[in-house]
Amino acid sequence: MLDLFTVLTRGGVVVWSKTFTSLQGNPVNDLIRDVLIGEQRLADKSRYISGPYEVQWTLANEYNLVFV
Image (cartoon, rainbow, N blue to C red; front, side, top):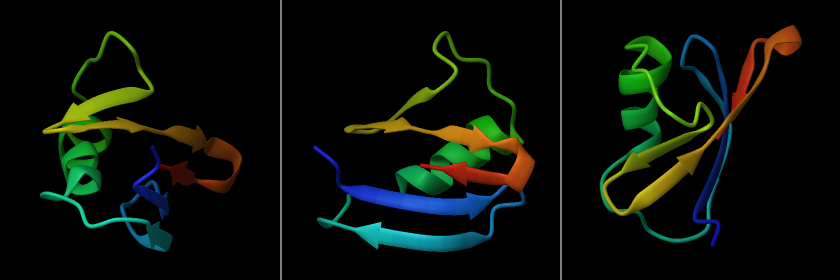
């Protein structure tokens, strides 16, 4: 189920965001801190677990954007 969709820059600035249900914690901030800035190594490079959420993302390098 899709709970949240966010578009942000590689620098972490949110360009657009839509929340479909209330969230526990802030899984997008966790992704930015641990993976995009912290460069945490993951077995699956497009999935990240934050509490009860599986966060998926893709990069659009030509536009310097991250879709979460």
